[in-house]
Amino acid sequence: MAGFAAAKMAAWLDRSEWREVKDAADLALIAYWYAESEDVQARLYATSGGQETLLAEELDVPRAAARLLGDDLGATIGPDRTAELLDRWPGDIDMLVGSFSLRAGPDSPGGKDRRRDIIDARTRGLRVG
Image (tube, rainbow, N blue to C red; front, side, top):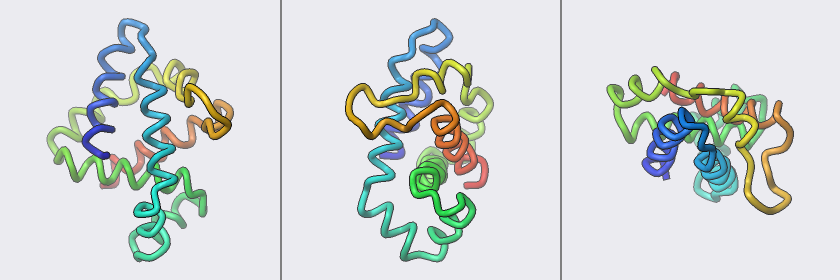
């Protein structure tokens, strides 16, 4: 999943320069999948690193999962590619926040502040990891 997230983040950065926002919905879906994953939740609750992440994100599971995703993403693509990604990430943050939502269903990440929180948590995971 982390490799797919990295590819979608790179796609967002490239396409958003042309005002194409379709990758933002995919990034929101990945965040949702990660937060709902039994494996991710087990890591958050049953490992010391996961518990530290939960506490750092004030026991907010979707934010903690997004941060864990950022950390996993960095481990998957390595430090050089992570640095390249962070040099450009998140691109136009207002456009990303405005488009960062699920295409259907009630589990969309919420209002703009909530969406920004989840995006920022993923970024913190990339920076710390």
